[in-house]
Amino acid sequence: MSGAAPRTGGNLLALLPPALIVGGLLADLVGPQPYTGLPLLAAAPLAACIVLTFRGAAVIAVLSVVSSVAIDLALGRPATALVVDVADVLVISLIGLWLRQLMDRRDRSLTLTRDIAEAAQLAVLPQPPPRVGPLLVATRYQGAHEGARIGGDFFAVQDTRYGVRLMIGDVRGQGLPAVSMMSTVVGAFRENAHQAPSLHELARRLDTAAERAGGEEDDGFAEEFTTVLLGEIPPDGDQVVLLSRGHLPPYLVADGRVAPLSRSTPGTPLGAGLPGPDNAETDTFPLPLGASLLLITDGVTEARDRHGVFYDPATGLAGRSFDEPQELVDSVVREVTAWSGGRLHDDMAVLAVTRPGGPPGARRA
Image (cartoon, rainbow, N blue to C red):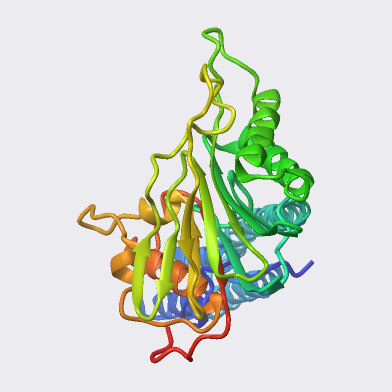
């Protein structure tokens, strides 16, 4: 079994085990006696198990044992000392190799788990095609934790008889309950985006699905709720109709300007179980040729720099033009990651759609 090299194992660290063997031999030859170099010879296979593969660590273990025998014979040490030295190096080597084997087994298990999570994400949150109706489309999901590939943030795009309908949202909470709620809302959107005659009706149907999936607390209010932003772009692509149920407004990115699109007060989140009708209103905005609509979750706007300042897309993306939505999505993820110093505190989903046909960007992202 060779195993996978740990991430800490670079070219320089790979030199540490043989350096320890050489150091142990030199310490035995020139240092005070006895056993000056034994700790270094014993440490070499243990270090190898951290920075090398299982096979490489086994080679270092053999070299350490052989070196221990050779130096004891060269210095004329008694047989009892030779046996003790070999036993010390051999026992530590076997312990290190056992730990290396456990680490390799854990890495394989984590890889399998991540692959399963990615397959689940593709099933529940499939990537939309690069072109839907009159629009170019790009998306990105970025987990806050290394290796996380799925969570409570989501997006969806459907081409319907009413035009292209968009959704981006965020489930309150984390873990499997959030993933389950996300799956419910995305599934309800796929089913109803083609049937609901208006965004209000679509939101109502999503709300019903979320309430059924979320359950209720003792006070009648749901423990989990979901913020969503719904959008509808007609077949000619010249405008966008928006309806927010507690979600962040999108941004219109055009000609180097980035402006949030928000007029009406957002409605209540889905599945909140609040009494009375929801009074959310739709807003309509023009979508010029060459313009992009950027939809995000709060993992973007709540990213903070080392001074605690929140990231603002309107400032961070200003002055740049984007000919393709993928450029815009990549720029957002890159900027948020740099802004937060690579330490995201929340998952983020990014959805961008571009109405092609405008002049090429003066300056690419």
